[in-house]
Amino acid sequence: KTFRWSGEYSWDFNTRETRSIALNVFEHFKPALPKSYRETDFVLLANIAPSLQSHVLDQMERPRFVVADTMDLWIETTRADLDALLTRIDLLILNDSEAREITKETSLIKAGRRIRKMGPHYVAIKKGEHGALLFGEDNQFFSCGAYPLEDIHDP
Image 1 (cartoon, rainbow, N blue to C red):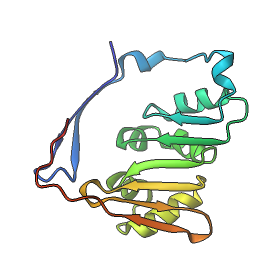
Image 2: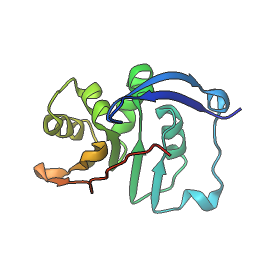
Image 3: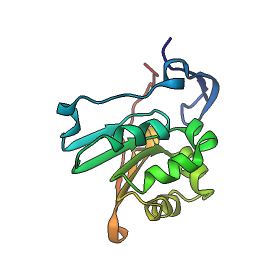
Image 4: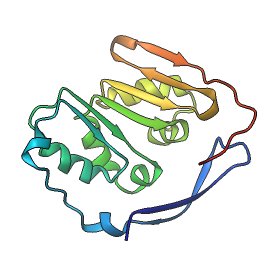
């Protein structure tokens, strides 16, 4: 069985509530990377448990740039693993509610800067229909608006 997430989005698609999660194959999964994969320059650690993300990263030779994604489940249930991973990555991608949950900050500017201090060189905070924020070293900051749509659909 595959990993399954089920949730419900609010009427405006800006917030979501997790209804159920089934780890299934991820519960005891320990990927072994082929040698040819271990020498890649760029690594994307997709949204899996931070311990699995670290396990994959442990097998890499010397990646030039490592990106990780996370979600509320990992923030709430495996925070120590997530904190350890943050010191090893170049870019963390998360949404606005996750950024607020990690930092307990209401301001996304403060949240982004605070997450940066936890380890990643860059932090990208997705704001749904309102675009995204990117935080970098030396207080670098970039705000990107989104193209407005009349109708929003979750594929």
